[in-house]
Length: 280
Image (cartoon, helix red, strand yellow):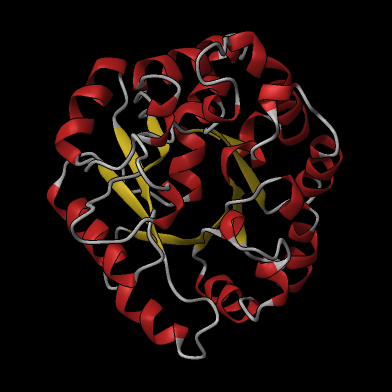
């Protein structure tokens, strides 16, 4: 019986000379380049076999760059890129990107849009319908104010294969659960949607967080989605604002230590491989 590969379902690379990352903010400690050379020893040290790299710039050129990286590395198994969802010719862009077997899905930095309803009301549904028709994946990058629009979107694209990034970024630092939990309950009732157990320590107290701060949120997500619809991710290098790659991985393993072996295999690799259709 072959072992299930361990997959980090969510991380980034960036190059500040090549692309713009306005979400970082002036003087951010993240405003340095992060490349496969930095990540490789980190994944090796914690037993991660493969990764999915996710867009960090609203740029098709960045997606092309990430696809080149996937071709050149032995561990990047999939790319979640960016396209202009409002572009009437978005299908042509997707045609080009889909020439790479590493192109698995799309994400837009929805959480940064001034209008919390942007993905639903801006005309972006046009692009989501193209993604749905092609069987590609979509990553919902949301915060609690965006969450109520996810079920409305899924009514329009009911066969969209979608995942919520970073458990929808609840206000962990303040210990706030509602309305996040009520909205997540509605989202989890939609069969096609999955959830990434990722990006949590940066929503906690950066200096003083502990695994116990994350427990309630992870256990809510586990109870709502079940082990077969959640997937582990590190959100490296964003996570370095609050902890190391090792800390993020160890914490996820600690919080989910009560799962049975086949359930851990699913959360820490199998689910991401199946969802993104990784060739691993």
